[in-house]
Length: 464
Ligand code: HEC
Ligand code: HEC
Ligand code: HEC
Ligand code: HEC
Ligand code: HEC
Ligand code: HEC
Ligand code: HEC
Ligand code: HEC
Ligand code: HEC
Ligand code: HEC
Image (cartoon, rainbow, N blue to C red; front, side, top):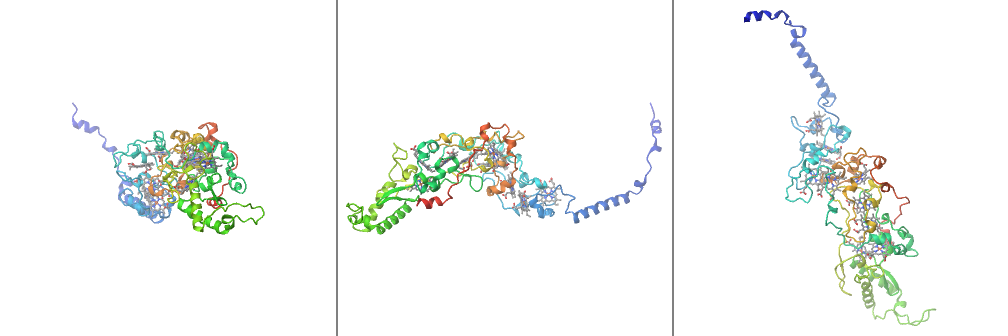
């Protein structure tokens, strides 16, 4: 047994360090360091805009007030929504949310140029991976965690159809020889020249936002071949393409002008003094102008509103309104005008997402709208399925056109503004994308010039 004294004697106390320069003057050193720090802090505060705490530059749009940290930060707290809302209008995502997400979950500040619009998918998937909503049966999928796991677009699910109340047969118009021969001769044909060969672009062109196709209108896109000419007292009269009551006013006026201006020919053509005019009864034997107008108006309207001859739906038998329209209530000869069903031609198909045609000009119409050329019913839905988008919009490939949620979806209800989005998008060289992703034929831009169409309104004027 060794005694504690023995053990203690082995300890070498003489090796214990003696107080050195700094230890001797620790108060002084501490004070000097603190002063230097304070000085630097003061200097940064006064000259650098609090850059001592600043994790990085704020986004360009916030740069003007970026140095005033307190515009967004309260001491000892995460950034509060209220700070952002003091400048930005309040905006909702959906009225059915169970909680409001904080701005900072999605908009990351202090990344400078990378900006606050680079919203990460996780910010969406946190809810949409296992969606909870305030209603029992939301009409949308509850498990969208990536574009690969994304449901088919609702308009292409079973049972969906195009509810427009207008008859239009893509197949006939794009393939029939009769359509090519249908163009009227003479003066009208210059205006109708683009219609000599019907292509998608004759009727459908990207609107000024670059997103959707502009509306198809009768006056510009159908009138050349389907002009509403009816037989009047002295040859054909063109009815404008308007609601029936407007047409009635227009035809009444046209009849009046004819009746007054060419009374001799209409009411008293027994006169044979004019060379070449044979002796025959007057075109109209009415005893008053009012009676003449009523009888002729009824004749004209009977032509316009003749019911559809369903056994022969083609043009020869059905030239007028009910070739294309359905009646909500029928025409009663001479008295009650028909009411047509609202056409309701959809302008937006994918209302819950964004899609721009201009950005996809390198793809041919028919690669996305594959069945149009053989589509004979309005009720057909000829939109591309999700799988087609996924050929370019993939999660993994380096050449992907992007598959982030925010590429295709807006978050804020109030910001449905394409210009805002355009500014936030990357530009990917198309060549990179076109590598192997799609079959070769899918990626050629059809040659030849775009037909120049009469501007909206011009067609209307010419048709009257
Ligand atoms: C436009 C609003 C805005 C301004 C101005 C701003 N910040 Fe921030 N800052 C943010 C947001 C948003 C975050 C993310 C914070 C969070 O999660 O709470 C952040 C994060 C930070 C963080 C990291 C803290 C953390 O929670 O991760 C620091 C440090 C910071 N800011 C300092 C500053 C300083 C210093 C200034 C002034 C020079 C400043 N900020 C100006 C919005 C702003
Ligand atoms: C002092 C006013 C002010 C405050 C506070 C403010 N912003 Fe902004 N913000 C602006 C202005 C001005 C713009 C540029 C114009 C515009 O887009 O409305 C802008 C632009 C934006 C943009 C557009 C994209 C970009 O990169 O510029 C986003 C996103 C945004 N702010 C989010 C936020 C968030 C999130 C907060 C809170 C952390 C916040 N802002 C706080 C004034 C403010
Ligand atoms: C706080 C939870 C939450 C977050 C975060 C969230 N969502 Fe939603 N989202 C909802 C709810 C709830 C609904 C509505 C469900 C219903 O119809 O009952 C919804 C609806 C939608 C819809 C379909 C309906 C519509 O109005 O367009 C889309 C698309 C959508 N969200 C995309 C996104 C995207 C993209 C993000 C990320 C930028 C996102 N969401 C982030 C909760 C959230
Ligand atoms: C003579 C004019 C005309 C031509 C040419 C034409 N369309 Fe249409 N298109 C219409 C009309 C009218 C509608 C609206 C009626 C409807 O919903 O079917 C329509 C609707 C559509 C729709 C949306 C409804 C649906 O069927 O899914 C798509 C997509 C479409 N057209 C694609 C095309 C493509 C692609 C071409 C060329 C191959 C083409 N169209 C050629 C007149 C035309
Ligand atoms: C280039 C001339 C031309 C244009 C432009 C045109 N059509 Fe036609 N349309 C025809 C011809 C010709 C027929 C008859 C085809 C046949 O008999 O084979 C026809 C037939 C129709 C039919 C009957 C088809 C069927 O299913 O039997 C409808 C409905 C119709 N057109 C609607 C429209 C609408 C709506 C527009 C404008 C969006 C339009 N057409 C534009 C020439 C045209
Ligand atoms: C060749 C097909 C065709 C014929 C024939 C036709 N229309 Fe139309 N009509 C259309 C198309 C296509 C639209 C939708 C685009 C537009 O408003 O120009 C339309 C729209 C309308 C509208 C606007 C209502 C709405 O819901 O969009 C009225 C009113 C109308 N037509 C009345 C008539 C009347 C009355 C006639 C007969 C004199 C007639 N149309 C003949 C094709 C036709
Ligand atoms: C390449 C484009 C694209 C991308 C990327 C994308 N979506 Fe979609 N999403 C769509 C389209 C198109 C629809 C159909 C919209 C409609 O029916 O109106 C849709 C529909 C939805 C719906 C409604 C689903 C339903 O059942 O009808 C939700 C929710 C949704 N997307 C969430 C997301 C989320 C979350 C992400 C990111 C993980 C995402 N989307 C990525 C294009 C996209
Ligand atoms: C990359 C695929 C793609 C290509 C290429 C494409 N479309 Fe579309 N088209 C769509 C999608 C997706 C929609 C649904 C957009 C919406 O309404 O939300 C659509 C909608 C339409 C509609 C219905 C009206 C509208 O704007 O929503 C018409 C008409 C149409 N396309 C015609 C064309 C024509 C003509 C071309 C060729 C010049 C073309 N598309 C090229 C994908 C495509
Ligand atoms: C041939 C490849 C290709 C196909 C197929 C394709 N895209 Fe794209 N898409 C692109 C390219 C390239 C861009 C441009 C990327 C950019 O500039 O950020 C783009 C951009 C987009 C954008 C953002 C720009 C905008 O506002 O349009 C959306 C949304 C989009 N695509 C949705 C779709 C949907 C939905 C489909 C399927 C109907 C689809 N894409 C099919 C290549 C494609
Ligand atoms: C779940 C993610 C998410 C949340 C939470 C969120 N944003 Fe956004 N925000 C987005 C996306 C994605 C965009 C780009 C496209 C759009 O408008 O949806 C955007 C765009 C914006 C823009 C620029 C476009 C515009 O509308 O002017 C502003 C400003 C903005 N957000 C402010 C806010 C503010 C303030 C809050 C908090 C109250 C907030 N955001 C919460 C995802 C989000």
